[in-house]
Image (cartoon, rainbow, N blue to C red; front, side, top):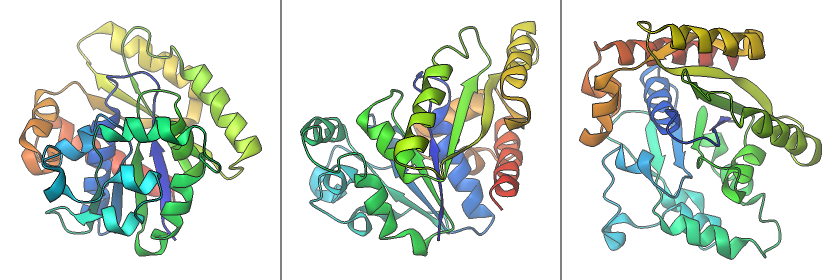
Length: 257
């Protein structure tokens, strides 16, 4: 049975999708059968893996149809060009599906039920959630074993985090008692500035042992990789960003044993 990790932060621009893509890539590199579910209507994880979202006929089934119950998750899954790494892509239409779902029964458990049908085929399933506390994000939390929280080491870093954690507690109480906070990942860390160091210290003070030791640096190569449709490990495996995500993945594997 797969270990399901929901990557989320209601704040945008924190490296959430970059983390989901590169964590999935390095888990697959470590011989874990991995599925990345793009559950953000922006579809950046899909674009970052070279999926052309404009040609709907060629694209086939996506998470939109899965969420609406029109297709099974297996119909939306396709292999990436990397061994052990599959993707369930999405398009902006997922936002419309979310609106359609608001009045339907079992709307919060749609993703969980879909994942159950393929969970035995994978070691890890990574969910890239939208940057909001939306119906999609709640679906992601209810479907998951673990919550992974990327936080950028910049001013306002912890803003909104308390609300997200309250939502997590509510979901644990009412719908998913097994959900755990896997940890907090410091992203966009710049060792040249005192601000990054100060914010990281604040994150450690707030989350203590749940803070990952690895810090993801602010790195041009990491920012460039998605525009080429590849993870950082395939774009420049010797870059500081690639090395950091590789080390971070080892920490995730250790914490999810």
